[in-house]
Amino acid sequence: MAIAKAPIRQKEHLCCLRPYNNGIIMATMHFPDEIRPICELELPEEDALVSDQEVAIATTLIDQLTGTFEPEGLQDEYRVAMERVIEVKLVSAEPDMTVITQPKSTVVIEALRASIEVSKQSASKESNGKPSSSSASKGLSKTKKASPVGG
Image (cartoon, rainbow, N blue to C red):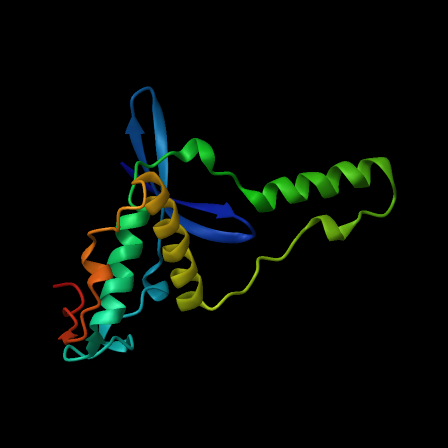
């Protein structure tokens, strides 16, 4: 194993080099001044209250999105957009910067609810109209304490 410094995207990074099969793997690390002590973080209090509705939405979303990891379906959209710009620039003097789209900003809780609703509709079609037996759909109304961070 070796520790090295490597320039990546106009910044020097600390990295670890390790042997792997017939090659070497590089994993980036953080410099000590890039790591904030836990006492400086603004973490929720141990007795923070989380409503049953929030727990139900989170549980439902996790249940619906849990699946096998398929990296083949992922792509670097920024790189693809930049390749389009480069292709245009090769043909003309002025690139069309409109091919690079900005990600849409959404309210997280609304996106979660919409995602859950779409999944519920899909699930009900697959089960021939039978309602889901998920605990999130039971409409609990008690309030629970959040688990402490890291425990």
